[in-house]
View (cartoon, rainbow, N blue to C red):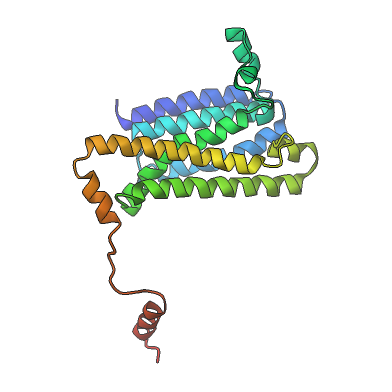
Length: 240
């Protein structure tokens, strides 16, 4: 199946999931807030498709994450009845089995953000910035961590500006003062696992893995930058 057909298939499936979960959400205002970034992301993917076609693996990972997010947006993250679903299927409580005392669906989504999106981010770095070796694993991890932090700041700002029940529903701390820290840590852990698995696979498949890794850490520019580079650029512009 071609990339285009595969993408159309995933896009169609996601549209069905999104429409179904858009019907009568638990909190319509929170649902709208949760979908703002999704709409921005989908629009960005559509606009850039002519120049950047991702691998089927990346599209599948992004599709999976968007579906998980759609579930959280429908129920609000702190009210997703995953434990009821698990009891219905197995007769046992997942929360009790794992020793959880809160609804941890939001934590699962933050972990999934790193686990599922670090690889597509790696594709961007490899194909646009042309990074290699160490930087092809570190930079996706770094961007995942930084965007996770930015999202936590957006949540905080939105909760502060909206206030009331809507702000608390969007923030979803469930009384945990360290909620944001734990969310960022889980996203980072997910990305670290994804990049570790990718590196292990490449160690096995890529014959020049070690050479490329070492070469990526070599100093390429012998001249220092900073004030010396500023002075050079200043002279080029005709400065004294």
